[in-house]
Image (cartoon, rainbow, N blue to C red):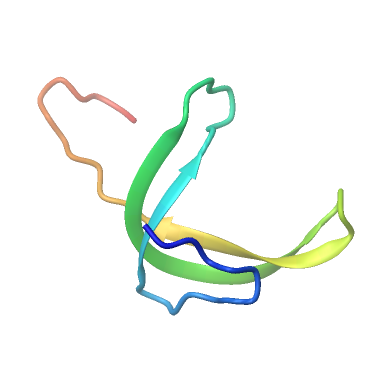
Length: 68
C-alpha cells in the first residue's frame, strides 16, 4: 500500500483502498475499488475547500446476503 502525500491527486479510474470507521461502527473498515468521482467541497469545521473522493466497490453476493 502506498499513502498519498497531501499535494498528490489520483487519476480517475485508479485502483484505491479506503480505510476508515463507518458511522456508528467501532471497528476499522477496509474496502477496495475504483476511483469514480472527485469533487471539491467546503468543510464547515475547517472553513477550507478540500477534495472529496468516491469509489466504486463490488460486494460479493451469497444466498445468505439480503441487504448491505
